[in-house]
Image 1 (cartoon, each protein chain N blue to C red):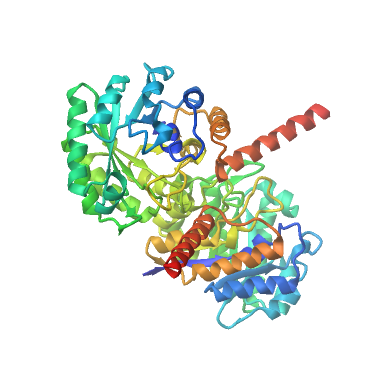
Image 2 (cartoon, rainbow over the protein chains, first blue to last red):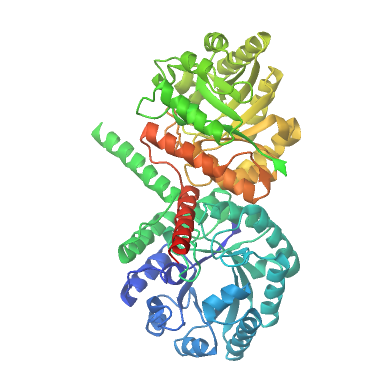
Length: 310
Length: 310
């Protein structure tokens, strides 16, 4: 069976926009539940300014406490060299930089223009790699920007190229606000795969309009095998108006396994992680797939009880 | 722009499983709202036994009252020649027969085996065509059967062939319980399109596991341009355990238009139809796409109000 690489982002992208502050212990409970379910790669936190994102203020405390660090690939976002330094001290081996594909999104998010943001990402990648860390890059709002609308494909290909040139081992193409539809996803990734190779690319999707699985399938058809997902669809983006939850891990796992892929994830145990995510955030999580899983359980339980009653 | 053929099935497939009896007047309100939204083809009712499906008992009363019958393509399901006769008397010009692809599903649904059911469908098609009507056929549980599991592709191709041989102008491949995933959908339809031509095929999907849009996209990639949808996702199947709502019309319209297809449907007016569907059934309708549309409205309203306040 062909393998799908799933990078679980609930502890970072999922939690950062939650209004209720989640304790470091609770984050570790969620991460342990994800590890128990078979998740092999986790974006654990972000070394951003605690003022900008209070939910991630405990990054330096969290990282050294992560379970099973020899086996699990943990990564962390860093916005710049200052964040990189903190990440390095906390024991981060794999970091990610985030480059938005439009001028306005960069201005609103980090108060820099696109050329400056590109340079900061490139120099942060170089600095991290220089200390022996592995770096990857996100190209955010790669399909549509909440401020500038549709993003030109050439721009995304060019920024992806620059991030690889700066030493990124992987570039994650991100539909940050969940505005892409499958035709555009397939088209962009067709070009990106031909240019850079599918094994160096991943896709980060949000389910704002309900297209996340259709977009994932369009990408899988182009050979993409790496996806960011968030258990229960936990997520959103505090800086991007209109963003809703991430592509839910259980949605992609169920669909991919039904299509013959091996994700390494046990969906029954994943639901325990979903329950932890719900209990620590108070958020209502999970979409149609989760509802179906619950309904299936209820049906099986009824059958078992009927047999027990016979 | 390439056109997508949408056949709205809420008045039949959507309503038939609703626990609350919907009056003929309320059905006509729903249908009028759908027509106002630009829907050009509607499965209006079913001439089945009123005892088996009480919700469709008013078929003969409803059909002659349908709005704008010269412009809108209305169709009705018929189970056999008796139903066909009633449909003919009510003024039906386009009818559909339903053939389940497995022995057990036919037994449970209409108390016949697969060969007998195939013969009844073929003879009903022939009889209707003989009176000048147009007939199409559904091949139901075409991917998975709730009783027999996965359905062999060859079986579905063979039954499709038989229905065309009996005179069907179109065959609708139906994932009646919403158990298909995009790889299987793409594979079956790839073969069916090569054998029969895309223009004679349609796809009927349910969103049980949240895969409906991904499945629709997989089919669109194979050239399929005809889809059954139900406004708000209204639906289910009273005879198929585990079936949830149909592929929602607003989901497919939004995704297809964003992919450059012309559906002829005005999504703002479609939402009025969704409101009618909710009010006449009491069901909670609509998925992520509908939520997004509501959130977009709220955001626009806020902008307008802010400007008015400046």
